[in-house]
Length: 288
Image (cartoon, rainbow, N blue to C red; front, side, top):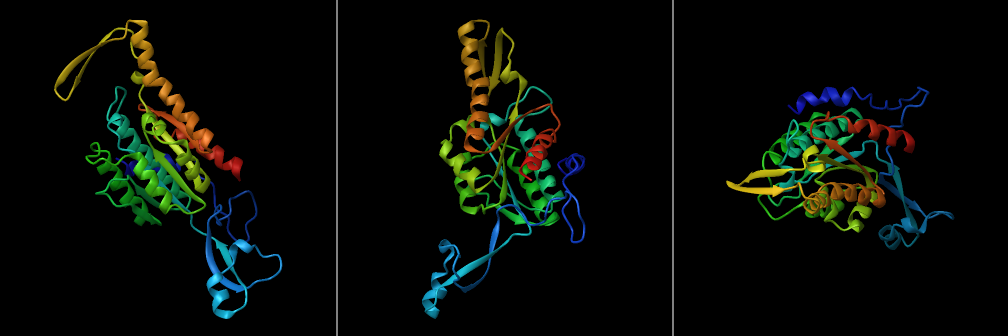
């Protein structure tokens, strides 16, 4: 159950948040680059002209500038790819099941950090779960992940549509965790990934099955939608085509996200759903 993964997320020792009067290396509760409008006041020499409040300036006849304050609660978003290629697995579980588990750990990690948690899958029939704090944020996200990954999406919208939607909703300083198949990642223009990484703290988790990355060099039989087929991987040419379709695509996905300014990790289908948090925490420490 996704509820049980709360223990795995907590076992990764999330960073403590600072309290007034307490010294030490704990992180500040004032999060990242997220800023909220506080008030407007008359313009003073040295103020950033980009923050001019033109409405108040026009109403009063005197130049005014906007003041901002840091957000006290960061929003953590989980974006779910529901590509048909995720519904495959030969080690322990399907990639889609592992994606749901990864999303659950991400939600619990955000909960432990005091973030508001939200999620979306880009489906026309599934509205976004807007970020909320505490259990009011986590539980709807877990419920959505169970339903979203119970079967492939039945509409034409995919990860690209989800990222377009995310780009409209994300605010500076947010954390965005994308659960995706490697083929879905490389099908999207790197400019879209770059824009999302610039607007948020971007992490992309790629469920991976060992059979896809290193299949046996022999004739394989497949059954799909009631139809049987065979693929002979004993030959060099066929094996190379397989490698290009899976192993090379996975590496390309990792490079794409990292070149765009985000973090990307592969997680095997038989691995712990919290394995990726170790690298995630290390990245946080470097930023801090």
